[in-house]
Amino acid sequence: MTIEYDLVIIGGSLVARYAAANASRLNARVALVEPNTQTQGQDAAIFHQSVMYLGRLIQQIRHAQHQGWYWQEKPTLRWQDLAQWTQAITEIIDENGVPSLSLPHLAASGVDVVLGQGAFVERLPSRPRSSTFNALSRHPLIVEVENRSLRSRTCLLAPPSQPIIPEIEGLASINYLTIDSLSQQSWEALPARLIIFGGEPRSIELAQVFNRLGSQVTLVVSSKRLLPYEDEEAIALLQAILEAEGISILTQTRITQTRQIGDHTWVQAGNQALEADALLLALGRQQALTAFNLESIGVKWHPRGIPVNQTLQTTNSRIYACGEALGGYPLFHLAQYEADLVLKNALLFASTQVDYRPIPIAIWTDPEFVRVGLTVSQARQHYGDKIFVLQQEFKTLLKAHIHGETIGFCKLIVRSNGEILGAHILGAGASEWIGTIALAIQKRMNIRAIAQLPFISPTFSEILRSIAYQWQQPSFIRRFWI
Image (tube, rainbow, N blue to C red; front, side):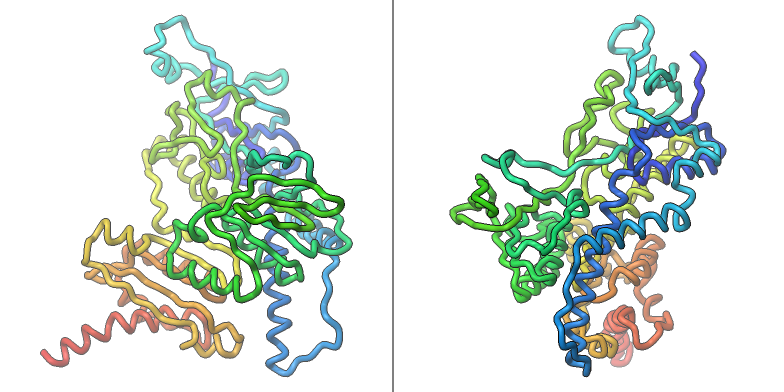
C-alpha cells in the first residue's frame, strides 16, 4: 500500500501546528488533522497570562503609593472588558504575531490540512499476533478522517487536553468553573468569595490574582504542601507570601460534597463546611483519546498521559507523542522542545533522547518561581556530598529596592568541579534571565564563566554574578593562604 505522508499529526493544539510548520520546512510530506479551525488552549492561555499581568499591575499600583503616587479612587476591573482585550490580542497574534501557525498559512506552505476527527485503522496482513509490530513497520499507518484515508510512515499525537473534573457528590448540580471557562464568564462583579480546588501551578496563580482583584480566596489542595515536587524552601516562602496577602490555604484537604443553596455554593472540604459565591476546579489536565482508536495499533494510554520512551515513541515505535498528551505541566515552550525532538527522530531517522535538565519551568506567581536542572535532593542522589548550594537574597540588589520587590532568593546547585547542576529562583523577573543558567547547564559550563559575564546594572540578573563570586571567594582565600 502506497505511503502518502512522512508524518501525520493528530492536532487540535498549538504545538501540533508548530510541529506541522517545522515539518514542512524540512520538506516533509505532512498532514495535519484538525478537529476544528480554532486552536484549543490558545485563547485560554492568552487569557490566563493577561489575568496574571493584571494581578501584578494592581500590586504595582498599590506599591506606587510608597513612591509618591496617590489615587483618589480605587481601580476597578470590568471582566467583560478584560475578555474583549484578550480576544483582541488573540486576533492580533493570529493576523500578525504568529502567522506561520494559522491554518491558511500552513496550507500555503505545503501542509495538507484536514478538518475533522481522525481515528487510526488497523490494516494488517493475516499474521500471528506476535508479529503485529513487524507488520506495522512495513505497512503504512492509516488515519481515517471523514471520507479520507491518510497513509503515513509515522504519526505524532498532539491533541488538546481537557480539565480534570473530579467525582464529587453534588458537583453536577452546581455551576462550577474551570480554567478554560473563565474567559467565557460575563461577570458584572467578581465573586466575593471564591474557592479554588487544586494544587496545580495555575490554581496557585489564579488564587493570588483573584485575591488581589478583591475576592476572598480559599485554596484547597490535597497534598501536604504546595507543589511538592518543587524546591521546598522556595515554595514555603511562596506559600507564606500568599497567606500574608490574605489567601486561606487548606492543605491535605479534599472536597467531598457540594451543594447549591440559592446564589451560593456550599462545599464540604475535609471537616470544614465552606460557603462561596463560586467554585473553581483547577486540578490539572487529562486526555480524552478514546475516539482515536489507539488500541487497534498498539498504543497504550491513560487519562493522565501517553507513556513514551526517551525518544518520545509510544508503545508503537512509529507513533510519537508530545506536549499535553504526555501529562505534566502544560507549558508551550516545553511542548516545542518535544516537538522538535520528535521531528528529528521521525523524519531524520535519529535516536535523540529527551534531556529535560536545561528546560526551564516557570510558575507565574508574584514573585515568579522558576527553576531549571536538578533539585538539591536529585543532585545528591547523583553526586552524593560533592555538591554545593549557593544562595543570594534579592534584598541585596539595588533594582529590587527601587522596584519594591525585595522578597525572594536565587539558589544555585553546583558540583565540586564548578559545573552548574540546577537553579531555583523565587523573585521578580526571574523568567527573563533563567535562560542564562539554562544555557550554562546545557553546555556544562563552569560557574566561573558566570562571574566573568558583564551584567547590566542595575538589573535583577546581577544576582547571578553575586552568587558566582561566592564560589570564587573560598578558592581565592585558600590560594591566598597557600
